Image 1 (spheres, rainbow, N blue to C red):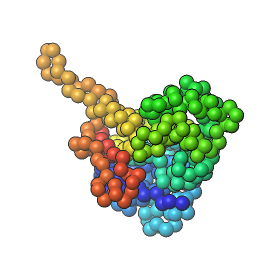
Image 2 (cartoon, rainbow, N blue to C red; image 1 turned 60 degrees about the vertical axis):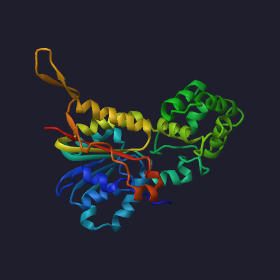
Image 3 (cartoon, rainbow, N blue to C red; image 1 turned 45 degrees about the vertical axis):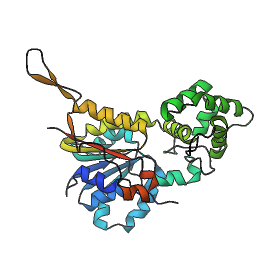
Length: 309
């Protein structure tokens, strides 16, 4: 099993302006790298993760932490889309910071039995929460050709969506899809190779997002998390795919708003509430050293905003 290396660790913790005694929510806990860094600086953390395997591994790993640091971290099983209900149900409102790392952890990608990777053969699963929901195999074998094409185009921005969907629909009749390499081979045959990137990359991304309702969960998480922050609190989000980056950028821009001139003179603020301002002039990307040592960090971007009083 590969260790999960937290992306943009120092940048994210710095953006949150962690202070001793502050309260912070890590809505995508993963293997606890960001939360541990926050707790090491004296912050208390409520972590949320939908992956029971991550929670079980954390319970084993926390024994190796400084006891005072470990005591400042609480972890619960749940979806980040339910962050507002989970937090308020535990008395976590008016917090100092919220962090969302909207990527897939290395263990999920590297463990063949999770079904996320087209580089290793495993069951076509892709569920982050394996206790519920349809698998990727359910979608690939059960969706219509049109539904598949829409998934590949919407969530993967795949230009050959219809050609791939048609090939899948044709091949699944005599032999339903059950493994990652089986699907990857069909995608490669139908789409062909046009760049160094494997042709199944966008299809697997799209299926993963559809299986886990990632866009729906993320939109709920963004709204819910922002409402949990006190004035002056910071919301930091790490994104990887372009589709997620656009969702976050648009959401923050709507809450930044703008000053609109009035015909009678003066101006008024137009935008969503609560009002925010950017932390940093632009999105933060990994430095050269991190991008070289951790290839999965190369597409990462950190965006952060502060709630205005």
